[in-house]
Length: 105
Ligand SMILES: [Zn+2]
Image (cartoon, rainbow, N blue to C red; front, top):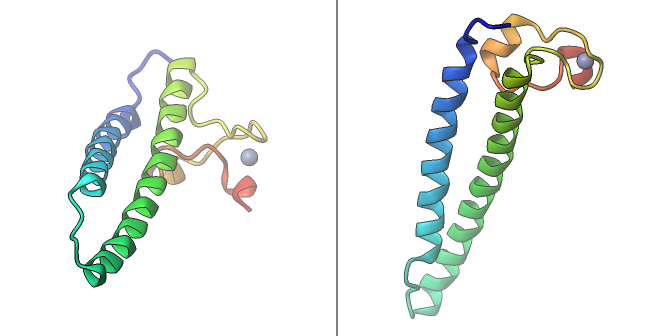
């Protein structure tokens, strides 16, 4: 397990991207509110969308960190539930996948 995992670079790149996006979402949420009430209703809806995106991003970021830890531990590519092998194809599609196809249900 000493060879550099080709998915590690992808995970790190994705992590950077997500971190930047989450930082931007936070900035957007902190921008000054428009005093007009109608505008504020729209802004609130936007905030909910942004918060949703932020939450999704957080979840993915957590999964990526876990995957990077598994790479460091040498358990990357092993299903965390059944210990079986996560298919190479699946890891190429979803580099942070923690479960094999069977356990995904
Ligand atoms: Zn499994």
